[in-house]
Length: 236
Image (cartoon, rainbow, N blue to C red; front, side, top):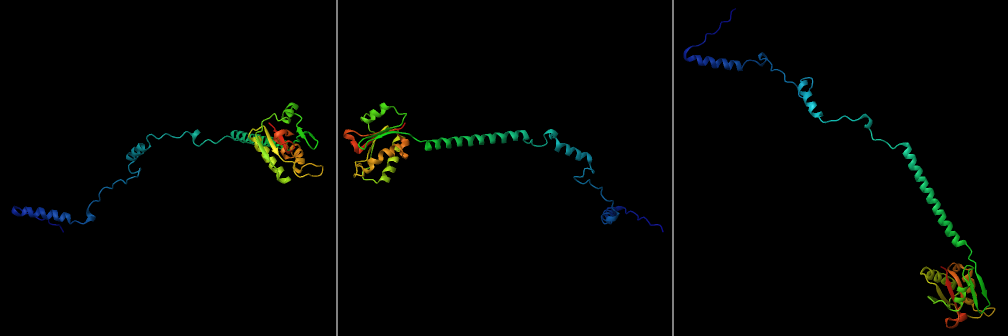
């Protein structure tokens, strides 16, 4: 059966036919419309290789490839590390030797016997180290050195007097003094007729711990106390 083509209106109805055609075209089912051409997906280099290649080239412009020789941080060579360890061990050995040398010197100062030539007749006593000139002892004996400091031990016990004597001589020597006077008094008579402290002075100054600070000593003369005091010449 042949579909009849509607006759187009003429005259004043021609405009109405045109509007009818436009409305019919809009109401046509979507299935009959041709699909729009597909748009290339963004970021897909295969869809538009020209565009993506250009973008990739712009991103990579200015990038310099790494040298294969410098592709990692160089490590310290085994030889350098060995040399550093060897220097460290050498320094530690030198420090140990130095500490050992200091300890030996201190031990020698403490343990080395200080010898004295002593004369003591009960009323008068004197002594000197062998290396001290006899002229210095004569000068000391006659009060030829000015007295820099005095220590009075009268009334002290034997033990206390010996301790105080050592502290006093060490302190005056450290201050650079040369001659001091130790007042010990005649004391109560002990066996032999000598005072207790007076009888100990020669031993303390020539054999006790205080001897390391003493160069010479002699019983004081005249106004300095005579048998009740002793001049002590300090070691340099």
